[in-house]
Image (cartoon, rainbow, N blue to C red):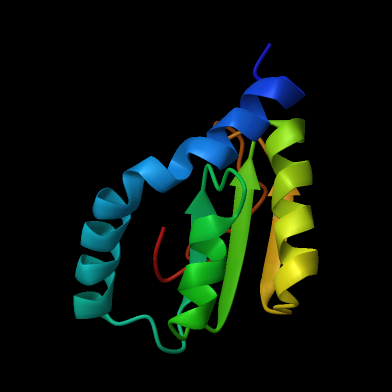
Length: 107
């Protein structure tokens, strides 16, 4: 019910380049906050493109969650390609997060 099918997940990943301007604005604001040494939850991480960028900008750790199994598979593929080891990807429902309170500095 919540899962993207493989076709939709791959289309999302392929077409997300159309949103580069939005991405630039988001990361401009995040840079103002500062990401160095922060533990970050990427809620609805999709294919982990933001998780990778957050890590590259200095996050101590990034946990990406998504309800979609297809998106989690794409995220894991991305992480294998980039070889970043401070990112963890989990399939999780945002209504029942498997984390203690105050586990993250930013969401």
